[in-house]
Image (cartoon, rainbow, N blue to C red):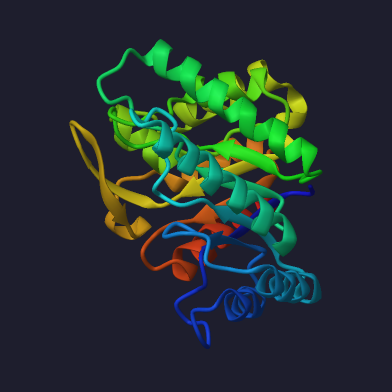
Length: 279
């Protein structure tokens, strides 16, 4: 994957309609590079619709990823909720792959008061079953657990890197806004660089060429994430983040989750290109 690709989480607000196909068309019109299909309320797309999405993406040159439903908890108490969570991840991967998505992203679990190491073992075990099933079905997408914004949620940097190290086909989704909100830190060039260095140390140089990043402004408290904000209304040092990504020669997707979607995606893209021109 060459360079950083900038895009939106879902169809841009200025799309003709909020459908995935019209979203892809609008992303291309705006000069953006990628779009994340938002299955956050459920995978409500059939195979025929997915093939139309793939055609639109191919013809417009827009690259795709997909975000799984919010209703996933691989640490649920009830076995039926575990199975339902696994099914939601599998369905995201199946339909996402038909759409031409390169990666699927999901929030893996909640701790529910359990020790973090115990939750990790459960998440790893259930995710391993998912990866085995995808292998049987010959579905080839990167499966990406995401760094999360609250202490109650599974998804620290080390947790997603450990899963990526131990399970074939798993790679991280680094949400820098979430990590900033969760820690109250990681909002400066040295701190952003330290995350990228950690990724490189754990997963190798090539991992920095296959990044999947979420960026948004974010409101937070001592308990972590409250809600996303537009970059201009937040304290996120997005220029420092872009500088770190430039200096580490990172490549991959940067998906903007700000409420204004395409405005901040274009802001990030322009700021990054300005940094490159200043080299």
